[in-house]
Image (tube, rainbow, N blue to C red):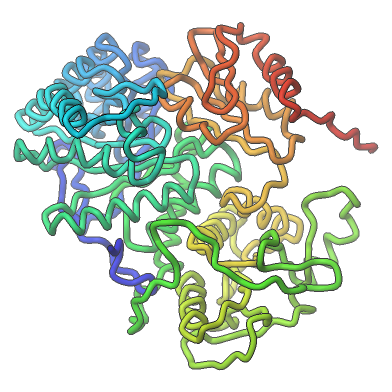
Length: 591
């Protein structure tokens, strides 16, 4: 199976065009040769017509091309008529997506008023109670018949009204039926989506796209690669567009880096027709990040040098770190083998940050690039290497983007029968003018993150960020976002929407203030139950909106405390962390 023609050459995946609304009246065409479309979601209550209209106008003002609005009930879905009418009064014709979970009847109402219906197969016609049940083939077939009966009316109505559908599976909301047969896996996500796609095709309806979202960038990347490979196997006419996104990415640098890893690496491989960067911030903040990511892709992907080799130096569908021997970087630090992925800095950065590092600091440079015994290789040329214990990297100035160059280096080492540890760099060709911090952050996330997701890399060096302290911090943030190291608390936080039962930005800030010193602890902050228990299954603790002003607390995906008043919930979360032995008191830092 292949998800792209070559891991070394950018060739955008050819997808069929789908129509969102009337292109002559402000609609958009997705797929084909059309540019990647950026979208976002409003966060207010769908029943607040004025706020919904204003938030949509705010998104359109900054360049959002498709706006998603939640419709949790039939009443909410019916109010989409008023929201759309309000937008048209302002002369705005941006396509609207109704976000549907749990209630097919809400979808049947929403389809009257909006251009796209987003359905999540895991909870549109199925249940999710984490029940363990063995299905016989006959029972499984019966379930598929039931799903078809529930989904077909929407397909037929979308076909009649010329609407579009987004079939969007989420890692955290697979049905019990899928979970019991395929597990909580990328394969389960693919099978769940394909069930709904087969129903669409049965009725000759093709105006749909796929999405495969996860809060874990590695899982998200694997899902999309596997989806495209499966679509290729099914036939040339299964070339439906795909929407890219890392769900619950969080806020600030962490949210941007996670999104850069997941979305950026796939864009560099030629995948993606629409994108969303999901931040726990005001929605208009997402659009500039989307634009910056898209502007970076031509520079970070190779569309110039067509290399004869199309062999993958890694398994694209199952993450496995490239096997390397353990070697010393210096007198104190080793890399490769089972060691952590190490952070290397330049001599100039070392001289600035080393005097400020305290003995207990987790963020610290671990080696100096100029002091390393590193073999710098031009992977476009033949080379010889006599042992596996030599650290290698790509030579500066090679006329290839960094992702392509390091993949090619790994492939040539593999062909030589060598498994040398590799030092990754975020850039091998320097800009004449230093990158702006927001661009340097995204570039590091795309390049380093994509390679780490391939399983390549034993140490990293970031030089695109010109600030010494910022470059060091960025290196550790990229490793944490890629799931390679944990030097601080990890947060999974959804971006808010009309279903959210508390102010996510305020509550996230409050939780961080109490817990950000808990290195290695993962906390999920979910506004509602839609993706909560499943999406945060690998989190240690969860803070989930259960009802207005009421919070449920989780350990893993198991609800432990119910209906806690919001005013008490953060401290009760701290108590829960203490009960499970994960709490340490924050260190008092003397000024």
